[in-house]
Length: 106
Image (tube, rainbow, N blue to C red; front, side, top):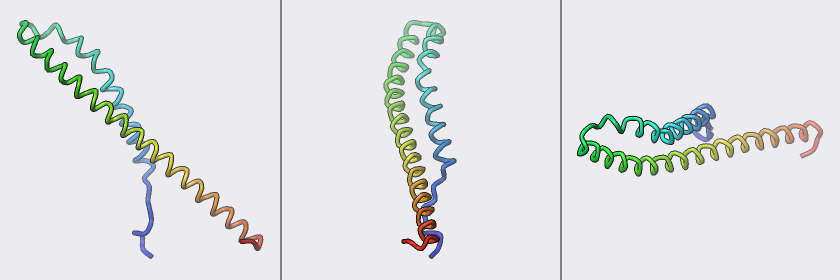
């Protein structure tokens, strides 16, 4: 059998993905503070009104994006935990089987 019949899990990639998604979530959650900081630079009321409209739309899309990032982060974390548990279960089963084989058992 070749290497194509094996599942290879990149724990480093899953771990860094989890961390990166957490960082993205923090940035998206903190954008509100920056929006309020620059409100005064818009100048004319009509420009300020249009920018406020844009920011409101962005807030709606940002909330949706934030929900998607959070969901993806939960899935990555769940996959990581599941694979780690499977690895541990396989290790324990292999060790148990090895001990039984040495002792003459099944």
